[in-house]
Length: 150
Image (cartoon, rainbow, N blue to C red):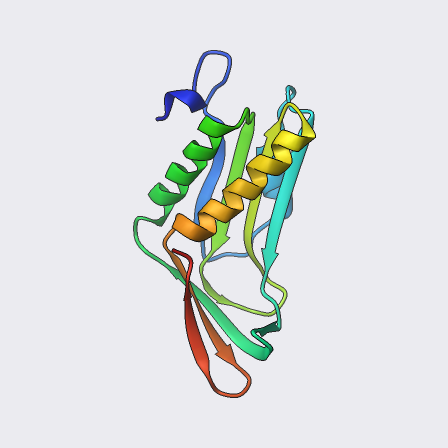
């Protein structure tokens, strides 16, 4: 465990770190980051949209490497080391998703709102850049593409 994320006055701030094939909940992530010392909480929700690159999307599926949760935790611990977070949550969906489904939910709580926004943004940006999750899109025109998150 990264020492920056754990101390007697700052226990493990990574409170939710999962990849699952079941529907995601914004309420679950929000509840996970609640902290009496947090004055600001930021939440980002990524949803499956009906288009990409000016093409209609008909289906979407996410898959992940077996190390995905360890890599997600590593990214979260880096964010915790760089920001004064009180709590972090990140959960990503895998499997077949429908248009409008939640694909990813991340949340950060910090003493102040600017820190919460910055930590949440960094968390989703680093998750997409470094965590081994891949998106397979099928388009209405019959084409498809793989999009690597890292």
